Image (cartoon, rainbow, N blue to C red; front, side):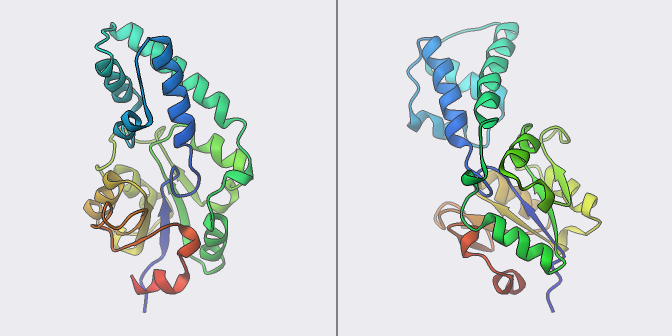
Length: 216
């Protein structure tokens, strides 16, 4: 008998892919600062806070800014990013995500979003998936970044379940580690050679089913 009562989903790379918008916004900022910033450089920014992302870009260009200037630059980047995600549509939902969320809810399994993004509510509203989550825990509710399990533990608490009854869906190494540290099972979305610590790794939620969930 499966003891799984809840599924907690990361947003970026699992439900939607907003990485392209982050890259475009950082690239625009780097261009303005005269810093060469490539998609390869962008890999270093995945799962990293906005402040640290800016520091990495400034380091790449050997550019020094005061804390006040850094704050202004980070805000400017975020404004551009928000402008782009406000134009998102349901067409940007990753394959299988909506269907699997609906399957979970029909089976009585609770659902939560566990994301570092401070814009997750905006994104879910734009893509029309807000109604499929019982609770949303994001960057507005947590102070510790993954691999700290805070975001997932708060999700479990909000759903009224214990960590052992939760399965986390994550596309980042730090997120997989956070789920394990939090005492939860975890499904990696991506490449097995990258997310090998997860209980199983699949290419996307279109490959997920209740049968697989219950076998975890």
